[in-house]
Amino acid sequence: MQLFNLKDHNEAVSFAQAVRQGIGHDQGLFFMDHIEPLAHVEELLKLSLVERSKLILRHLIGKEELPELESIVESAFTFRAPLVKADERSYCLELFHGPTLAFKDFGARFMARVLSAVNQEGRLTILTATSGDTGAAVADAFYGQSNIDVVILYPLGKISSLQEKLIATLGGNIRAVQVDDTFDACQDLVKQAFEDRPFVNKVGLNSANSINISRLLAQVCYYFEAVAQLPEEKRQAVVFSVPCGNFGNITAGLIAKSLGLKARFVVACNANDTVPRYLKSGKWEPHATIPTLSNAMDISRPNNWPRVEALFKMQGWDLSELSYGSLDDEATRAAMRELYAKEGYIAEPHAAIAWKVLSDSLREGETGIFLGTAHPAKFKDTVDHTLNLHLPLPDVLARKAQLPSKAELIDADYGTLKELMLG
Image (cartoon, rainbow, N blue to C red; front, side):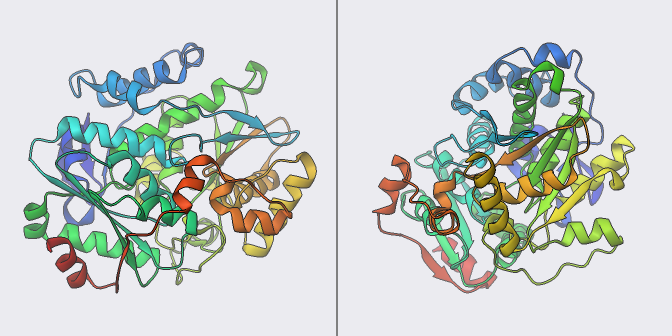
């Protein structure tokens, strides 16, 4: 598998090198310039998640690279992703049945095992920014791994208390760092660190968010799993609604489409609606990030958007084919109530946004699938208050809720971050 820097096509790397390096020169993302469609997609849909994922990932990565791939998939994808009917025309793909109750478990567990397999440089330091669920999944996936230290940045007061507990209570090789600013500021600190080449080399720096191509490839697999669970008569006109923050999840879906999965895609955003406004006006105008109930989507400058545009150019698609919508907090609560009143389905804010935008864009004869990216209990306060419930905590959250935080607090200053990491 050959990957190219989207900002400098002369920088071409193998899959293993892209995983080790994380990001290219000038903060360019690594991406393919061609995707060969899969043969016999319908036959693949008859397989189990694990067996199908082995074939999909081997097809993408290639025959010669990563001989451990099949065993990595077996050890990473040990939980299910059920498709649950939410209303008459739509289903939720519940991606929150992994160890940290979020979709990021798929990508983080796969990446941790791939990085361990391809690491040839001794001790590594993972530096990643999270707007909620990435940090928890990365912390769990890398916890206790020898020769890998993890530093997770997250915005102070802007992720849920239970999300924070999953990140900040582990200790050991996992270091949680609160940043007194927005997620975009956290993401900027990560980018500055990767531009500091002496620092990169000194600590063996890598990133575990969707900058890293291995995360995206793992997420491709559950789009096929969703369609495989549909009755055959509903597979010809599928629409995926993806709650979008950094746009890695929808990039993975579009890779699945490039491989031959028949589907239409809908961008679902909260008040941080840079992409919906861009798709409407053609002007890229990020605003200051707005804190919302759906905090994992509180991103105004999504890192993965260049990959989305590269895919559309590669496939000869037009961006006008992307449907889109956005909801503010009031509309998000209304969507949660509406879905619960209709079918008794409990959705946290991100899934509720995806469902509502999907409902508004479904056409006759289409079957909708919206992504449930986190367990509702991770947003217990919001869900309880909005739906007048008392949602019980799953055991993993109940245990974490009682543990003290080990997080450190810094300003959004690169020098301070660098000093903390070197110290």
